Image (cartoon, rainbow, N blue to C red):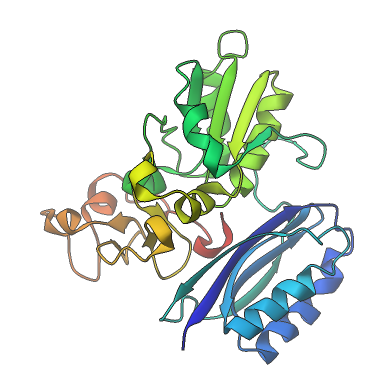
Length: 289
């Protein structure tokens, strides 16, 4: 079976989100749809997979939610089942920055993938990767700054230390599918940064629409399912795996590290993470974009 994967999110007030959990889970179960959906009063975020027909039915169902008619969806395909279970979770926030911001009130300027190269080639633009260190590790845009975060909320610390609205007039940021950089741009606007831009549709949209020969992307894109990573055209990167100990993405060279133990640990979790720390890169691998 070919699985159609849909990654989507939408910031929009959803006051009755708690009442939608059970019906949504039943809808997915009846159609053999797997994956995770997060529901919050501020909107929806998820990545799911099913047959072509089932996935399309679910997206049509979600688009009937008030305000969700133009749900931002990215599609891709895989031959292997990408998720083990169905999860529909209730959250206070779709993704937390640790500070109060409301993307429903203000966000940065969306930049289409076709216009992204020109923007980030501007020497006055500070390009910030809004993802975590393990995601940056296997791929990023040329010239992008790595905030060295292990959790999304740590990007506010990076911003306070590195960026100044009085000096840095143009900030561009990106993430996997758009949700994190959309919230981050809302934060940047709150902090007084004048020109703030983010990649519409995220890296997934860029890799889908921009030919590799014209690309400023280097490496692969970490995704939150069992594919681990994708390349241009959203093709699975067969050379990238994940450590069962910490979840960190691994290239072939990483498996040659002296601390690598098959099925147990990699060099990253053996040496870079304190023994008493949470070794999992993401508390919920399948709920971020």
